[in-house]
Length: 360
Image (tube, rainbow, N blue to C red):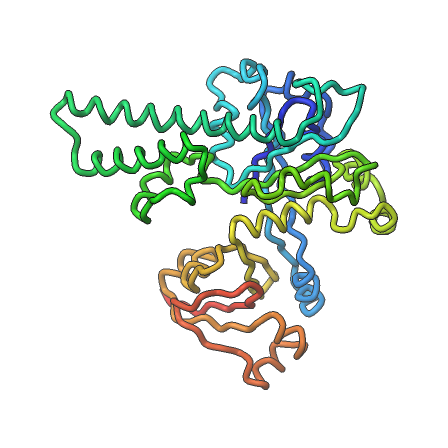
């Protein structure tokens, strides 16, 4: 899972990146000087994996991961600093699975806001409009190219269908509606997949608040209902939390009334908006967490582990995590008849512990 982090200059975008990843990237003017994005891969915390690790102390525990990209220059003149031949920030952002939009809500006289004042709703609307405009440019460019096919003898049937799909997409973009609300069929959505349009990507609004705003739910209200998930965090404080020892960190989080740490908040939101789930495997040497989409069948989950497992799929031996937790061991799970044999069309549930049987 890849999440691209964007925001206006001085929104605290890189501070949010550091708070999420425990990195120590330079903050304050990063967008104005950097030429490449900050990148970090972090492990997805999951208490279920802690228990599985305790049950199998002789095996290493491998958590799922999420990759964060702190994009530079998306909404500033710094895009001109890109290295020759390097992909533009918007092109890099198109490869992300979801977008985290950092919106500034904190007041700080020492850090000027590029638009002169603190107005989260205004800033969000500006960024959304810029993303929509970028999508429109992509769609219109492709439509223009297809129209030129007429001069070369006319469009093929496939080109006509693509042109019609793009027309529906263009109308939705002009009305600033997400593509999920556009009258598109499954075939249409497959045609659009290759364009990696921002309007088709889930978004999380990360409201960067000040310490004095922690716990104040009214700060987020203007942004709620915009169609995206909204989480509020004090990035500066959360970044400092990473500098503490593990024992001190928990006490500090409790004392400050932060609740769930920023990294976990965003991961949880990401899993929700991307409709993701986790299943687990217990192998010879390791216990591992895998990420799939909710509704994926067992054969798709098998392919995540190894393509041979999907190609030679025989069956899936499935145990619900809660059953394993309650009964305490695989031996007891089997003795109580809680181990299920499922076929390739079985819809994998979040928390399933699976062993795939296959033959190639």
